[in-house]
Length: 96
Image (cartoon, rainbow, N blue to C red):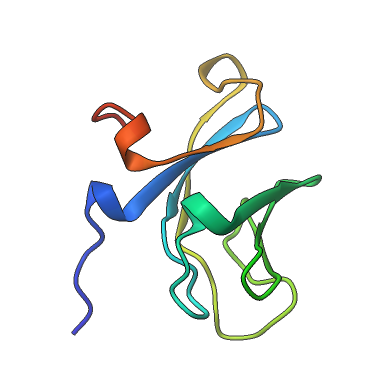
């Protein structure tokens, strides 16, 4: 049985005026997306370990199958920060 994700298992991603809560570990090989994640235009998160790309809007893997990423939109527009960045849990100061 899978265990539920804790706050430490999630990262915050800011992309194109939207804020997402994202599973911290890549579903392909478990790489830490706080370290290996790269933001691409079109709200796409790429894991640099094996180059898999995920839509932040849907969590769907765009260049593979059966490896969707757990993604939740948590802010947009005025609620979201305009920068493009990935925050580690320790940078989030207890908020998601």
